[in-house]
Length: 502
Image (cartoon, rainbow, N blue to C red; front, top):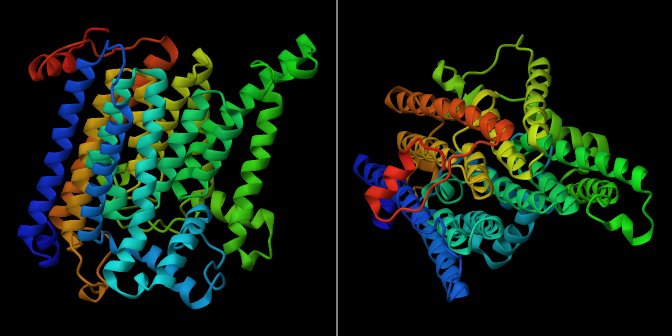
């Protein structure tokens, strides 16, 4: 693959890399189904668990490094990282952030690259192409591997240990989950990682850690703010319920730390710690605000929802289907009204479904649903934005166990992988060619590549509609269709596609 990547932007090398990535996606998905059916009713005991996990993470790291060092990725997003590292070397902490979130790293990600970018500048890695590429990709790869570990923790607590290892392995080797870090190069990787840990702590009713990680997700990329309706519904509901319980029981001393009361203390602490922590990290890049609290919060949370340049840029989106790829909104487009109405709809869906059963597993599923919905229908999506929703979807499966979630994951995930590799192929980006080899081409794919984006967006849209049915079915009626034990490829696939309730 290294030879192919270095040999130039040829049709043959692009085709080989693209086909290999798609086939690997299909293979890992089928293997996942086989292993899930095999271990469906396993006792979960695993010998040499630490050794197996170590091998999985080494394989995941090697696979990501192989792709990451041979494919620079989508040049516009890659340049966001390199500009930050170059500015750090020239100007230190100043002259980077100019009062807008577009085109800069979000605070949490910026703080990470202060460390890695600073080391790259000190050691000289940033002074040549492959060294800069390594400095940019390494933090993204680490975030990917941490996300795999978060999925393992979720599945290990609510599934059996063998299933946990299988799901962890799937995240480690399936292109759906390393496209963003190693191939495209997108900050959404950090958002997905923080969101997975947030869902893990949410499932354990650890209010402080859940809110801290949800906030970290929100201040890692634009897509992270889509999770806040779920975070706030979770926090407010448990806070109010805890106050009611305290009023009824009048607990004293250590009784306040009981499960039904602790949210009254933990939720305010979590909110304060998360917001203040994100703000203090953000002070590294907000000198133009003169430490203005409200200006900082607005620019990285509210403004991105109403200040976007395109309906979509090569993303899986309903706007791609209707020919709005790379098209800027008209001056009269009511972005503020659209943002408020859309957010109100998402909050309403989360509240209605969650309050039907008040199940934390359902809430994780709704987090995935919220990100999926925003990716498909909210303006401003890009080619890599779907990865966060898909990773949360797998985390939701680890809790809900409904095989229909895997149907959504595989269809939307395959559409995502095909769309990404076709977009990168169309621009000639599946290589390590220096940036001067590319001119100022349009940022939106056209022709056959755009037709692929339209088809993939249509598949993702159908997946979302099916996901909506699942969310209502599971969240409001509690009906599930779980994978039953099966042995062998044929029986496993038959069980996976069967319509009977498990």
